[in-house]
Length: 113
Figure: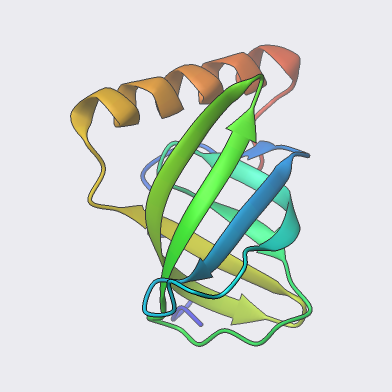
């Protein structure tokens, strides 16, 4: 959990799309499927029935509007059945594509507070 201070750099938007991820250290394990709660160019929030620890590395595959992103992430926080995942090691071109997705979501509704 965070200490209460806001550390996000990107606006978050409500999003409903499938996210598949696995523990980065477990390449043989099949992806689990989750539904995103919100999304930003810097990360996302997902609901999960599985336990993940803060700091755990994940490999993610996200399909949004027909575009598939293979990303690396780190669990930033865990609260109840939800967890925050921060994208890491983003290629600048991929970051730009994620910002475009965020703009598309912004056109559909206001940023979350």
